[in-house]
Length: 82
Image (cartoon, rainbow, N blue to C red; front, side, top):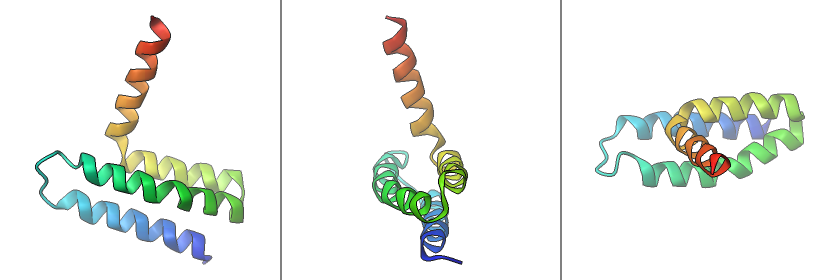
């Protein structure tokens, strides 16, 4: 397994461990950290393995960070409808 996929798996495992810990702000600061760490890893995976594997890793990351994705899609939908 390549280094980029190992980093993506470590990111996913860390995200799941963080999700199990209690948080006063409903994990939003943790989500910002995971997004900031995940974007370069996603780029590295896409660079090493191509766009299809990059899209699979993106889908996996979006399933872990679903609430930021939902709020982003609602924000974009509100901007477009105006």
